[in-house]
Amino acid sequence: MDAPSFRESATNAIGYWERRRLVYNAVLAAIVLAYFAISYPASKSVLTINHALVFFMMAVLANVAYCAVYLIDIFAQLTAYREPWRKYRWVVFLIGMLFAGIITRFFSMGLFQLD
Figure 1 (tube, one colour):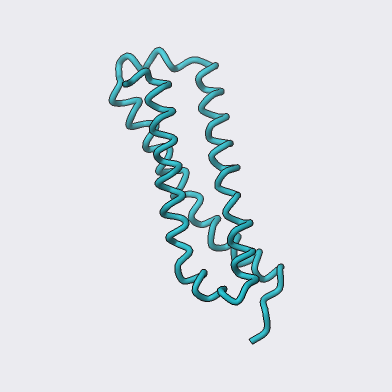
Figure 2: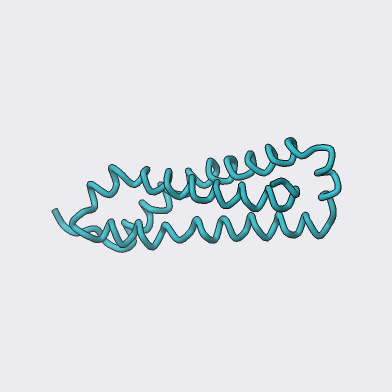
């Protein structure tokens, strides 16, 4: 079997990871909303333009961090380990989701002034 082209590997990576980006963002949003609800009504004081900008900045940074997986995925697909990688890359998604969720939890606790 011929080695896949960069284009083929990149197309496969985009198809795989972009479908999961919605889940990634939904989980992170659910964490923020949960901590907002936990600290309610005190969390209402966080509803300012400055805090909205912080939330927006954090959402953008979380998605920039998500894009790092493309480098790993494309590289892995260009190696002889392409098929095992494609079979088990969901593990990378799960680990990344857990890591992002933990970071989101800590930032949410700080923004909503929870210990």
